[in-house]
Amino acid sequence: MNRVYPAYYEDFRCIADRCEDTCCAGWEIDIDDATYEAYMKVDGEMGDRLRTSIRTYENEEEPCDSYEAHGFILTDDLRCPFLDERNLCDIYKALGEDALCEVCTNTPRNYLEYHVNTGEKGENDAELYSEISISASCPEAARLIYRSPEKMRFICRKAKPGEIAMTVSEEGVMNASRAEVGKGVMPTSSEEADKAEALMEEAELGAFLYRVRGEAIELLQDRTIDLSVRIRRFLRHAEVVQEAINTWESEGEELPETVSFTDGTGSDGEDSAGATSDGVPPDDVVGAGDRYRHFLIRMGTFSGLASIGDRWAKKMELLYESFVGEDTEEDSDTPEDINAKDTEPANNKFSALYNKVSDNLIKYLTEENRLYEYEHLLVYYAFLLLNRSIDDYDYLGKAKLVILSYLMNRDMDAGVFLQKGLLTKEDREENAAIYAREVEHAEENLADLAEEILFERAFDVDGLVAIV
Image 1 (cartoon, rainbow, N blue to C red):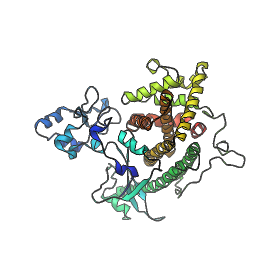
Image 2: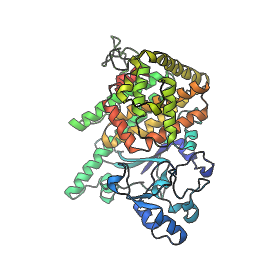
Image 3: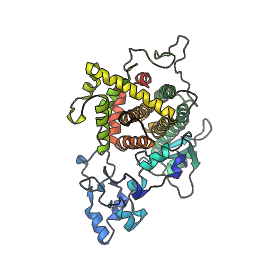
């Protein structure tokens, strides 16, 4: 097994009660079955507390992102019942670290596991890759992500003795038969043969995704060109990656070692999408040259997400008040209404203000030698999201979410910049944490965003290329 993670992960340590936030409040805390059974056997006062502080989920009443059968009964202010006044864990203090459930042990880490074919061409040699990152929703993680102007580095190493895979799926990932298949041992039964075929398909796609994500990150980190051009190239690259995946899935063609793409340098000054030489589509494409309208569309999408805590709602309110001119508490507009607001004369001044503040923010960060923070933001989400297409084959959708995450973070920064006249590193880290908490930790929100990305024309590659 190989471990893959950003280099800063090795420096991460939970700072516990010294943290300005807590992972143990604001959302449901599920308990895995093994930990639940262990809790039911605890004696004494702590055992009594555990048994009265856990509930069994009723499937029809619970959110769709509940993976376990049990969870803690949160307090009225949505805190874990075992979180004390200093934001320390009573379970940890009484029973030790090994007594924590999987969610509490792993948070704020994100995990992804998939197989990669590491053999020569034509050979089957599947290895498990276990990727780990730390979510920017954790303030300490955000500080690590943005602390250094150096390019973000990633480490791939063989697992050390004692390190094991984080998950074992019902389909048998890394069970004995599939592990043997990964070493080239042919299965005996029909069922095992099907599993072996599925494994090798996963490994083939996994190897391709690992390669092309590396290419994508290199594009984002190419500091010889403007950040906006890097983003356009990233999106054009993602289009070609998706085409290769589609052809591999539908026609059985081999996935290429690398992909070639055009960013708009044809002899006639236009690429196949009609883009000019800088990759910008003509004005008849939705969103072309109209950053403010695209901002309104994004606001209609992201402000409609289920809110985790009140900090996200406050950030959306600040953006509405700053650049739309309305108080969200009194605003009952649908996303379609919001999308059309830029046709109203009263919004002309907000359009000019939004564009001016957004431009001045980039100039400010450039003068402060901090534009690398947006590069880090893009690379962070590229590493986190792109290879999750191993499950649904939707690489392009993940790439679009990378860019939308950048745009929404930039919008949140613009609201602060307008309000304060500057943007401190602490402001950047706080906005990154608020956004990550809202988007990364709610399956419902991720599903809603995936649907919007699929059907909203402004979120097509041409629409995004036009406004970055």
